[in-house]
Length: 366
Figure 1 (spheres, helix red, strand yellow):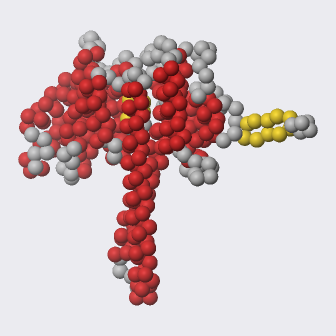
Figure 2: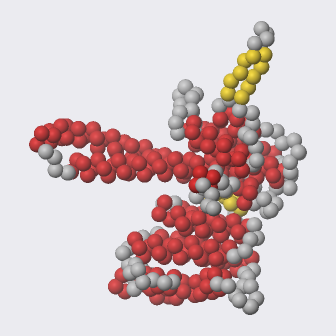
Figure 3: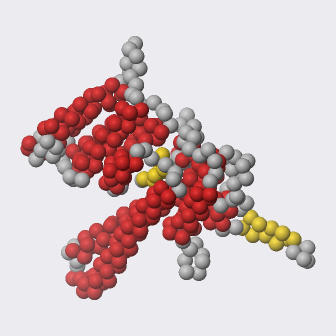
């Protein structure tokens, strides 16, 4: 019997679980303590700050609760730290109350490392807090941008639609105020998005300063590979697929990277799936998809077709076909009685980097 949807929604993908079998920290360093303080302050002061009176309003208040609830669930804890306080006063009366969610998170996040856990577990759990916080803020920023864009579009449609004579004067009088409000909201949303992107860049820089091989992209903290590949391929890749329409690309490539770092099977297959999604999305968006496509090769034909403006050159099309035939096809089909196809670490790195590079190249042409 299928699980209720509400139960599925409680499952949260966190860094500590994805990389449980991948040792990263052998000791707890002063640089790690500094990073945790910096990470929490970024969350508290830049992602979900209080208002001018020091009070968290919606949606920040809701976000703090979501982060605390989801992370404590995945870590098998009732709560990250005590939710309530209480004591007997001098008159022997019991005084009690509830801590704010940011206090609950801070108490746990910045607790002193006492050696009861390995440094690896301690840090991975707290990196998970940073990851969930950035993912939560990414979600609210996307909602802000989408709502603002929708408001701007709807305001434009209403103001340009024919109006009955009885309301035309009123509509004309309200039009400037409505358009001004919509533009203000759109400007605020764009500012929020830019500020969030700069905060993501800051987090990645702080990982570097702490000499920790991690990077944050599109809602996930992952182990970073070669520094040259990270700067020249990986970072630009995650940047160009930030738009929600590339969500499936993000999901499969994140899976590819995680499988590579945790030595799971077939990470290159997920990289190939991500690249195939890119081909399909571009073909659909350009109106080139016929509905008769059965493989990635057909979508490549759509992109290389002269009547479609040769979106990709012939030599590029051949390179893409070769990639899918040697990577996706071999890994994506059962080998029967033949030996199970496997890639070396170097081949896997190549496949993921090539898929990222192809994606960046094509998405920037759209």
